[in-house]
Amino acid sequence: MTVRSDPVQAFSADFELQGTPQAGELAFFSPLGNTVARLQWDGNGAHLQSSGQAQDFDSLDELTLHTTGAVLPVASLFAWLKGEDADTPGWQVDLQALPAGRLSAQRIAPEPAAQLKIILER
Image (tube, rainbow, N blue to C red; front, side):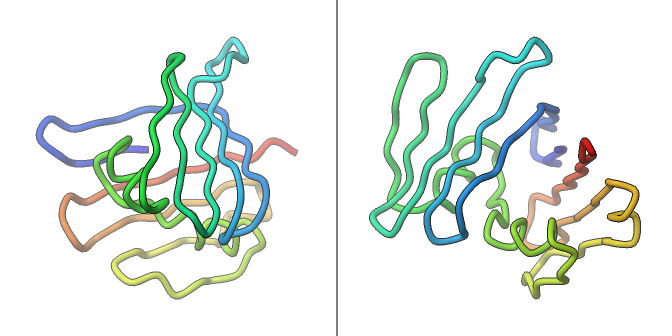
């Protein structure tokens, strides 16, 4: 993922997504398989566990903004990974390469612009 903020933020990680847009978990792993961060959410808010510290947020959007500098469309990600083109204001998704295990999405509005590239393991 790349967020074109000042300074530009870029990171890559393995991830595991479970649950639903309403209640779920998104875990990020280092190349060695260590858990870097675990995001959990439900109707009551969102929780971040990272570097041995825990933080609570009012929403998943607030949590992703805090951690990446951009609101990530996690709810849409569930649809995109199924090959569904979820209408996500400000985002353009390219699902053409999904059968080959690749997904690309760009946030064009609001600023900062962001690019999300996913390579799926089959």
